Image 1 (cartoon, rainbow, N blue to C red):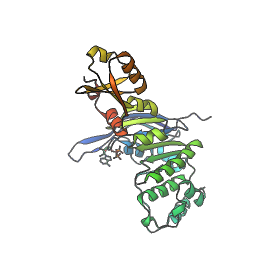
Image 2: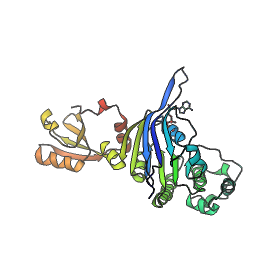
Image 3: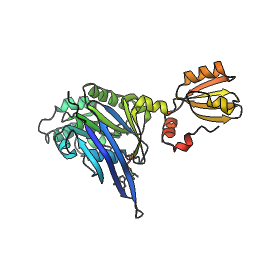
Image 4: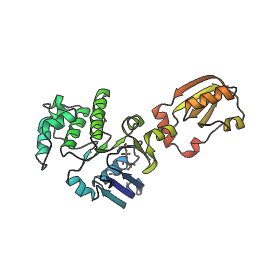
Length: 306
Ligand SMILES: Nc1ncnc2c1ncn2[C@@H]1O[C@H](COP(=O)(O)OP(=O)(O)OP(=O)(O)O)[C@@H](O)[C@H]1O
């Protein structure tokens, strides 16, 4: 079996002029290795550096520092060979061509393209294949870009916020198609703002903020570290009682009620109800937004503030 990494990035840095005479570090020392068959989410807020990192992988932007290897070679060679393909946020589509004509035209540029109808179906674009690109919604144009990305039977797909502009159904179909590609062994790296997308589709999540990797590991672990739930009880604990609790990531007092952010609501609830005087328990899942804000907050905000 081929165990050579699909992507190997070491110490990648890239900055851009900030418009005020200085420079912004878009990617600020990123190391990342992706193995064949992995599905990896690059999760981060606006400006985290996800697009710049993807552009560096694809050879569209040069790193100022660091080492990049894609499928054992340079980005350029990997892209030209068709073994890696990308679905970017934006990208030139000709407005006057139909969806099918667009796929045919791009297919004619490849040496051994997949069949047009096959990629249209695989991308969920068969239903509007005769529509002119200018009449397609944002989500439909994304599906067309996805069809184009599949033309070379890529082993690796890089997707920059692929579901932007798609409604719930289109998102669902898109990820179903993507999951079947992953099942066939494709390596997939996708950028997203949504912890929920990462959670559903990627076993591994790389959390980025301000050009750096904040966390890299199994998505479930990252989700747990974000605090999966809040447990609220009526209780007036001493500092020592509070400190003795397991699974508490944060504490907020609201009058007689105390709210505990936890990575294991069941265990905490059991402990509170059986070993302390806490009562009137309520358990709520932390929203995804909340979890994300928590993970990307400066670490002093995560201290237990009693
Ligand atoms: N060509 C450019 N010129 C100047 N600044 C840039 C350029 N490209 C990116 N930046 C800056 O680099 C930082 C990282 O941007 P990047 O687009 O990589 O982040 P992102 O995580 O993809 O964000 P988004 O989710 O909004 O797409 C931002 O501060 C952005 O303004």
